[in-house]
Length: 340
Image 1 (cartoon, helix red, strand yellow):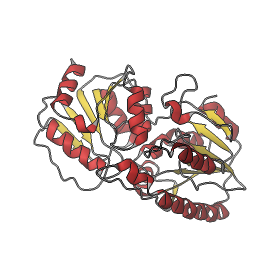
Image 2: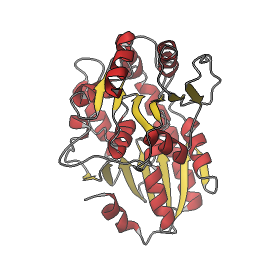
Image 3: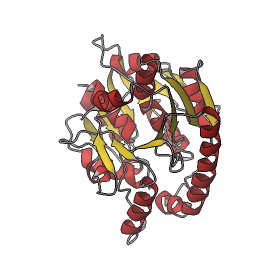
């Protein structure tokens, strides 16, 4: 059952709260087609999120009410980032409790008919139909021996919801074992979600480099790619994925730099590019599959999900995977190879 069939069950509702997690931009961007569907049905949409996700959605939907939720404030260290993240479990649990309290107050005020959470663990209400949207039903633990515990904790959070929607194909999975359902909740595969559409156009750009994700790894990758791409003769665009001031500047005028791009501009850039370079985040993978675009994927070091997806998709027709520690002249060689 695909997204349109699932959503058609809610044509009679009047109001929905949609709450994407602020962890990079992926959770916010993949909610765009769902938000747009509700708007076409004349259903009132209230967005609840924080941080960069909030900034992005405010620019996409200036007409909508957007409510601030407590941030999870997950940080990455430069080394051993997976362990560093796992040790912040208490912070995540605290944020989820605060988030649930804000959601309860918001529901009392606006009285929605439906709550849709994209990976926000506390965005549910016992008296309102609550849906959990995620491809990570079975998250991987960065610490050996804790896999079962991490899955159990995640399942406990998800069990607070009435149903789980998985943005993946049921028969040719992109997310692999991450999205294997369990019997604790009604589960539906709704197909990949992307705000972008494939458009036939002239390929006027060689490469589009799209940065995303939490700091400091976003900036680390920006600095690495800056040094390498100064040497390239290919024409391209670098989208920084942040509004924080840049600390690196290109002398190579063949590479144009943008902080963030709206949906239409980003769609145009990717459609016009022969090759994309980006993280192996799942939302990026869904965009690339939707656009049928060849890409070099660079997993965020220590982020077990991205490292797993990189290994799983390395033999996919569209993707070449290079670890961040291996970025060197070999990246430029790979770009030349894929473009020729």
